[in-house]
Length: 302
Image 1 (cartoon, rainbow, N blue to C red):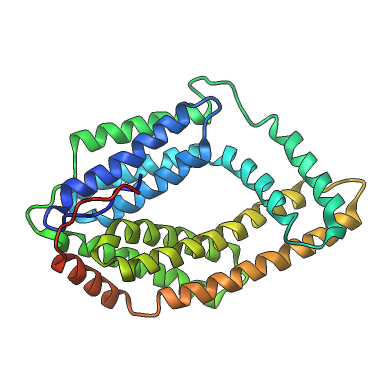
Image 2 (image 1 turned 90 degrees about the vertical axis):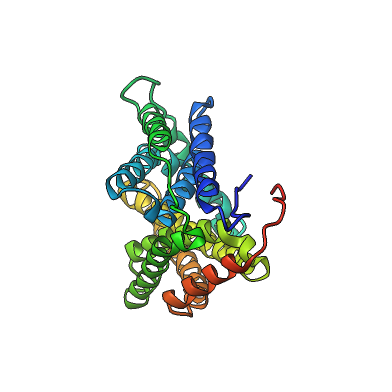
């Protein structure tokens, strides 16, 4: 269940619960056999976004330490997730490109599956999953020792964090416009869009008819950018580990993958331009006004 802001007069305790919940989900996902790395990283990204939203609720040093713990937990688990992402990208491509590439995709899928067999290390103190879980536990301890504090300011306490998130998204979009084929620029936009999406989902009850649409559009944006990122991971892997007996098919398939990625980037740019059409300060002013005027209602489980 995604926890959301339902009592604008008491945002601090709700934000704390909304951060603690995905951190707990991440720990439980990493404890599974095998670990559900995708679920863990998704939960950690949501927690980090909400910490950014509540940046004014912590002492700077406490907030930075918490954010770094959540970031490092995700990084430790990223290698395993990259392997999964490449295989998922191939599976999606089966229905997206011409049938004449089916055999090449099957060969690529088999190669990726074989390569993935060596990516699950034994569970000891040095393996990445154990390291990720340790960081998550430290984040839980930090939240217990240094919870967010609102000082009675209501939803206005979110203004610094929301402004920073909106501004960083607008900056990332401008970088994509300036460098439309730069994979790093698109990856940065994806991260900033995810931050905005998680924050908008949390604030959605302030005005569901408006913010609900924004949340849906941000979901579409992050999906398109996510598929493009998976294709980048796949293309990088093909380049580093080319098939020694099938260079012509590999070259042709690589060209098609770049075309699919370019299409995802084009769709994402259109969506992002619409989402960040208003200046960040106007967005922040409007959202906080809606939240401040809204009457509390019972929470509906998602």
